[in-house]
Length: 366
Image 1 (cartoon, rainbow, N blue to C red):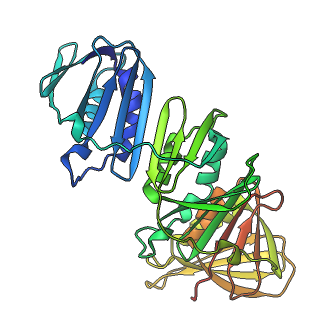
Image 2: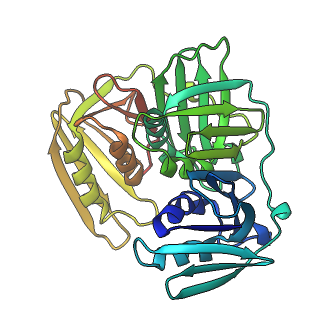
Image 3: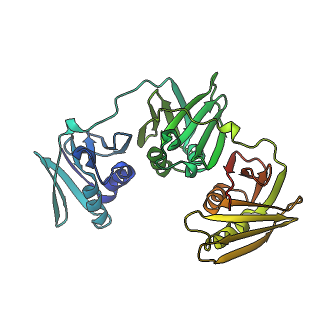
């Protein structure tokens, strides 16, 4: 195999797939990426056995072939070469020679046959979506995923396919994020899948905000999301996701309306003196006023007061300030509506009107 190209041309697909390559590997081959070149196209593949990323670019190749190369080393070399530098990659036996100007690098290779790739799978469910819609659905909910929870089914994002609707939900047991997207999908039944955390994070980085369409294929154990330049395949988590509909409050007696940026800024300042471990803050509600308080084991205290729209009884309730800030960051409207059943129940954050997304946060005992 031999190819000659510009640094940026090779670096772009490498950058798209490198995130899936772990720095510490159980198998040496997983530290490598697979490069395949035919006469007109170059394809770069990386995998960690859970997620597979494949990026392709059109390129005239001098000599077709395939090889596996150390992923991090190859990316670092390309990144540190001068901009617009021309480079040549040539495979000679078990070594690869990369040259650019007066720079020369000899890299070791591993057998292509040892590189694990996902076999083609049957996909009874297929749908086409705009990249921007799928990205918004993921980004609006992914922050509530659990991290290394023993309830393994929480360590990912649940996608639910309904008739004319696609729903995404994530929860770590203390909070829940929900978002839905209206689609043209016709479905007689409800189908749920759980995409693992790493796959969700990589997919969020790869999806763009434009209206280019992607093809989504769902099998019994895998999901594939395919665009002209990129192929993403991930294993699915085998488990039953909690009934999220039971968590979403239906009738709320307490409702307040606040400016999102004002509330977020007040929470950020107050959080500086909150307990570093528990991150608890106290809400004190009174007519058209919200007082936010925090204290820590060093007996330091912070208090902020902001104007809100609220008419009701005076109440106090505690929350994890990080959960509130992450939910507020996901809301696009300039105002936020916060609803509760009572002072000991979860709160519901959402946009005042036309909100497709809802965020539930459990209270804290302070």
